[in-house]
Image (cartoon, rainbow, N blue to C red; front, side):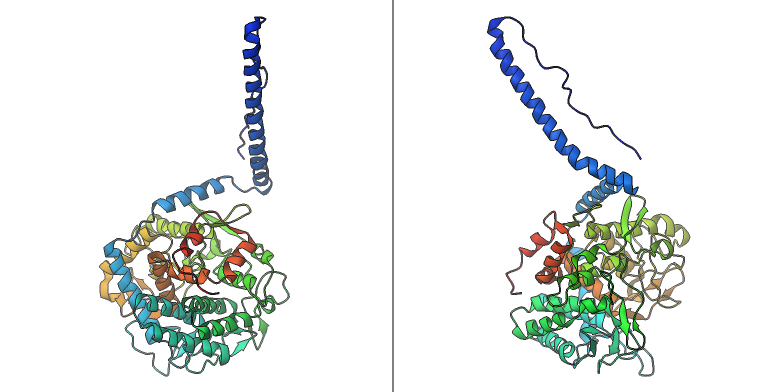
Length: 514
């Protein structure tokens, strides 16, 4: 470890005076002034030492590189310089992409339950009744769908009364009819009846993503007492303490009636940040704010980018969705943890995205020149010719085969509009209608093998729509952050406001009742 000496003021000699009487008074004044200046400098230096030395000692005792903090600052400055407003041409492209994405939720949400299908054909055709995917809804897709209705109502894509009616239908179903266990819901259900499908689990993260939509609707339609009442009931019923299953701080992934709690827990950085904040901020069943520090952080460095990733990443890559889903609702901008290494999770997602773009251009392009390049990248959990794979990069996921996933750059529009827009435009211009259809981009395609997925997936279209809207207006962030439980939870865990971020964002919206 490199060390640097700390300069101390030279206190060896003070000005001296001669024996000439007329000079004594002036010399005395000069001596007094110099003594005061020296003392002030020394006091300032002592303060600096008290601030810096403990950090240096911490670095030395934990073997953490000092460069991480410096590098984070550089990454933040680079991000601020390279996030221009979309051009008029880009706005037109984003409008088309967003409206197509919303069309999925409009057409594939059941009118009686509000449940949104997990997936559909990219051309809009239904799954045959004899297939396993027929009529299967995802509660996470439904959470994105509720938020999509808020965006559509605000933009005039649907009448506000129609959006409100659909929101109330969905909230009423979850409040009064959906099967639940202490407020938690099954991951996959029948879109018409809400009955469990595929023997799926009661899912903690998918319930959290549903709540993202529930609480967004609570603020978008805050003057509607029925929406507020139903949303309050759904959130307040969730027993977050029960999902700890006896652990002091780490939530379980879920529960099954046949076998009980799943063994897996949210013990490392992942897409669960929104789940953690909802649990800590719960007005009825909160868990301890100390739980925020209960999960591990694994840091990955590629070139100039260092970021936190799931602990499994060194072996299996780094899917971008883990850096995107929570941010689709929670505005982490301008907040950082008040302990070393002072993590800013928004900047962390920026670094993870830029690292993937650089990795694709520098490494993967040599192996798959038809699939990857500076303006052609995107790896996150998706369909593939071999089935569904939760792949990512960097580091190099051994399963990477040239497949591109459009929701990877699209889900990072709110982080890196410069490189994300360039990539989406390249995909659209180069491959055209082969990959860009009724609901926007297909879920995945492979230019190396010419494989094109026939499907779209609800959560991938959802993160595309929400990220684009946050880039364009910040509305989803503003609605969600108006829920007082969320900023309160962020303050409780030590996510301190260091710049405008969420605070500045809130000023544009009229006061809304909580």
